Length: 279
Image (cartoon, rainbow, N blue to C red; front, side):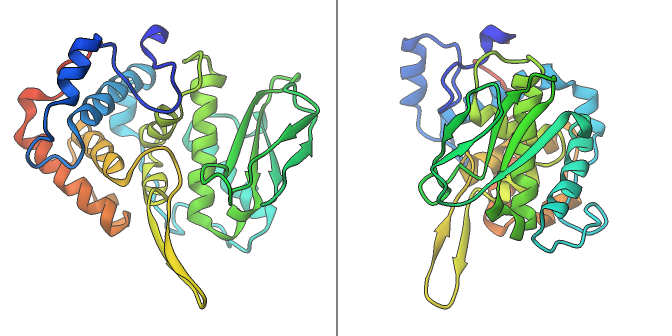
């Protein structure tokens, strides 16, 4: 399986020949499908890879967490204590022992920090203002065999973003830390959160509008587009036999719309699903 995991961390790919790949790229987007044809094939192959890693039955029966006090009974007040309480829940959901995770913090605008990590004593960082994906960092295993992740303190005031960031960093543990892949792949890491019932949080972070007293606009986090999240979540619901899962009511309207389009496409095109994969 390791040989089938894409080595390029910037996008998902398949093991198709260049001739086959060019043919797929030139295929127009299928009617009713919110993602391009090559994106659809990449997502489906990644889905099968992760299904092989984490098991069909486990994925079908795993609880899906939602942004509600019943699943996160925490009084969020922007402190590190609430981050640690959130980490306990996310780690348990993703089946990583909480006591094996070291959680550190850094601030926006910090360019260089000192660390005892095995990756070196002085680390240069991009601030979140410069890099939309710098909400968290995974540094691997420490000398005492624990997993080290860092969290941008900007997450502390955004509970749902906090959950999404912790889920993504722990997904690195599931893939790299537990030796399921040898080379980092960020999109595959994002998709792993879906398999552990946390995809709602990461999907909602893919595209958000904001408005305050002096500005407005949009922002995104993660390595997948909102349409790719919609399609991947629809694949997840289809695997679980969920026609109208209640958890979709917690998706942002734009992601939910892409989910519904994707779900309809999948139901109407079962004959082409998971074709042109090499698994």
